[in-house]
Length: 355
Image 1 (tube, rainbow, N blue to C red):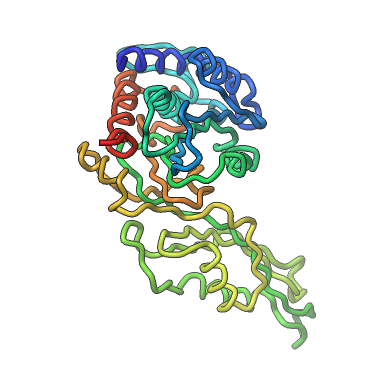
Image 2: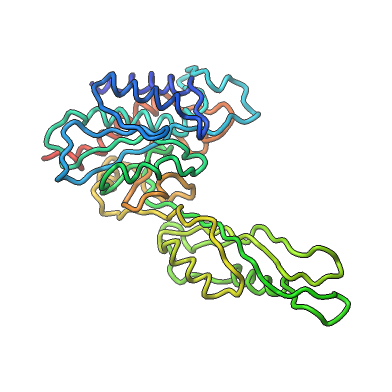
């Protein structure tokens, strides 16, 4: 059974590579995934370009595990020397756009789902979700179907991690800040220079240290990245705008960080969004313990994924290497997919099967 699941996973990955699926244009890969699952007796559900399914013996009285990865891709960059939609295997490498990020993870999770799909007496229900718009943090991907999935208790998010466990992920807030002054003529003692007001707040962003420090990430990081003010040399500017990139660690929520910022600066602060949350899972969680028993390592991930949209404990793990994501001539090793299928199953066995 394992060998068939592994080979089917690679065959599905080849079909996905051959089917363009840019963010917001994933309809065809959604159909490929649906047909693959339906042909194996799995009932699927759909919303937009998202596909999800549950194990055969779903029991509303049990907790539910989410298996999630995405089937959208970025557009191929100009450095490609190969056809990005030709799933060629050369020296053990399966080439193609989305092969590594996150096709290998998705098909391996689907194979693991199929392994347990018809099992009776599992300790957890399993919800498989193949979602859209991850690459653009879009609102019509995982976020839009979460209310449809029911109560979820923890999640495995498939992203290329060399099958090591990312037990925390940074959150992200982008802040648009506006310092207000009063216009005046630069040659006279007139006006109230908004640039000088902004500088005071910018210095605070540069020097402030949040007291709680993440064990995995260290201190929270804030960086002022854009600033704009003034219209001509002889006018004291009445307004100065600047942008702050805030990388939130698992020591704080986005809302806590935003409240601290607003209480310490004089400028207006408007977050573009607070939806990309930091995430983490306790090291004592059964899925982490299972991973460690398989010789996998744990770490904190600096990159953002759909994990940021979840308000439940979650771990990010999958075959492939994050360093290959979005590169020209993207590839995943066939053996990595085989290993991904096997390790996902071995990772889940002690967690969801009765002993």
